[in-house]
Image 1 (spheres, rainbow over the protein chains, first blue to last red):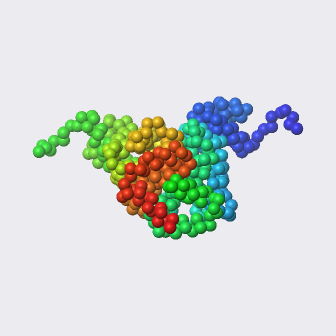
Image 2: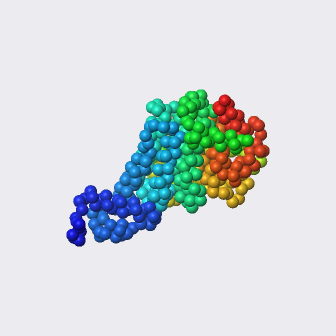
Amino acid sequence: MTTGVRRRMGVEERRRQLIGVALELFSRRSPDEVSIDEIASAAGISRPLVYHYFPGKLSLYEAALKRASEDLAARFVEPRTGPLGARLLRAMGRFFDFVDDHGPGFSALMRGGPAVGSSRTNALVDSVRQAAYVQILAHLEIEDPPARLELVIRSWISLVESTALIWLDGRRIPRRELEVQLVHDFAALAAVSATHDDEMRALLHRVLKDEPGDGPFSDLVARLIALAS
Amino acid sequence: MTTGVRRRMGVEERRRQLIGVALELFSRRSPDEVSIDEIASAAGISRPLVYHYFPGKLSLYEAALKRASEDLAARFVEPRTGPLGARLLRAMGRFFDFVDDHGPGFSALMRGGPAVGSSRTNALVDSVRQAAYVQILAHLEIEDPPARLELVIRSWISLVESTALIWLDGRRIPRRELEVQLVHDFAALAAVSATHDDEMRALLHRVLKDEPGDGPFSDLVARLIALAS
């Protein structure tokens, strides 16, 4: 039991608490609209004490973004077993969990939030994109990707980002539908690339040959056949 | 014939000249790497005189970006006659002309250039995206787009941006191939959406029924059939 006397936190513990409080506030309102006073109040400490741990709002924002980036990057990690389509679909589910949980903060960041102009912020966003890219290559078991594969993966990652941002603006489409659709988009973009390049065609055949009939890639093929008929 | 005496330019004329000189320099090196001294030297005037017309490098950068944005948005304008696929392909050609001409400036801007942090810069980039979106809706003859169509168009625009950025990083894929591929990507993303939603399916059928057998959309269908076989 606590004694009622507030325990004094260590520096790292206090910083972690403030980051958590900030992320919680940024999950409900844009970081632009959240003041240091509010963060101090929610953490139960004085405004000057916040500045003791973080010299300014930008440094607290960057620390919060760093933790969020690590959280998001960790969600792309998936065991390298089982069908690829199902793995990608699970990762999309965890990605949308993150977007759902951090809506206003995610939107503000990607649309040019308070810390835009900070090269550290840009580097953190890029590190998440890179983590997603590296994961996908690892699941495809490819170490030295040809230019067209890199293009498909990286441009699809940007499609995922923009889809999430558009979804957050009104949530007019069920997120589960978008998770499946983004997996289908990946396959569709890879297929388009494969119609332009033999190396991509061979890669696509290798990847698809082990996909089960009830996975998202087979589902897409069945849907496209139904659409064409 | 000129007399050899330098004619004195008016304020607007001088501003236009400096913007042109800046855009020319930004087309060869990142704006980060171009100094006001270089711009002054290329324009044949003194550094203090540049500051007379633009109070700082950011204001010159923003003026240059404004002109480039208007230029780019104008390239999306296309007569509303003939097959849709061919119209989109011509617009992609003009877009890649722009990207080709403004490589370092375009990359720096989209990756977070010197004026990132300026809400005016973000607004200009968004205005170009919006111009592309409005053009596509107009060509589809749709005034009140359903959420899924808006998603397909806007997320495809971000796919185009990221494809251009990746292309600029080494130019490892022929740009003509990418222009066709992006038109195919648009059709593929619309088709995926149509497999999830009846309204999108009806729209896709309406758009595709007038496409000629030798257009890019028919070409994609033929390529996909060949891929599947």
